[in-house]
Image (cartoon, rainbow over all chains, first blue to last red; front, side, top):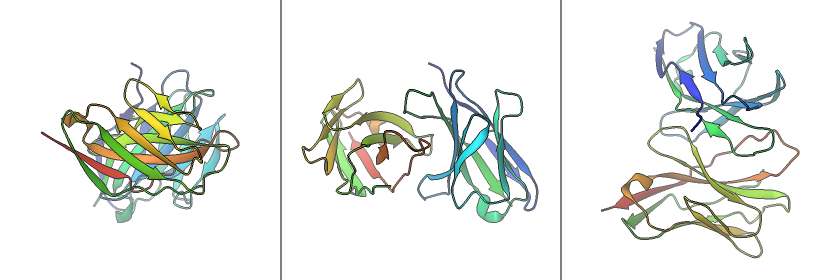
Length: 113
Length: 112
């Protein structure tokens, strides 16, 4: 069964450093999303991406965050200057144009120290 | 986005049916009911969705009341591997980006 792949599975970074989280979507999927989940809290929507541009973003997704598809396959989330409160699980999700069901990756656990 | 209300936790005996309720009294006519689950901090997993008719797939059944203000997810023969947080989400069928708004969900504990 096709799956969404995220790398790395766990990343530890120093406060103020830049991090890039990577996602390989399922091959025929057109819509891409990032979510995060702070430990013990609910899953929160960050951003949706379609046709090489952001289609919607939440209040959490401020200027420190950016997304792109640098090579037409990978889908990345960049955090420019990490803060302690950015520590969370980050999930990538993708879907086709016709199927509304989103497939989630296994997540990247980001720890900012 | 319409809100949903779910009990915070439920227990179920292994092999028995698990019935997870969800209230969505402010649901609009074009909004679907979706169910996802999350097993121990893994990525959420799609289970089933429906508009107004009852739905069944290999994982579960979804029963939606006639007025569509509530629904029940049924796992017919729960196993220990079904222990997870179950999320009931309502979302428009079109005109949005497809984002999912998760609540706190119901933590289902399947016990031997």
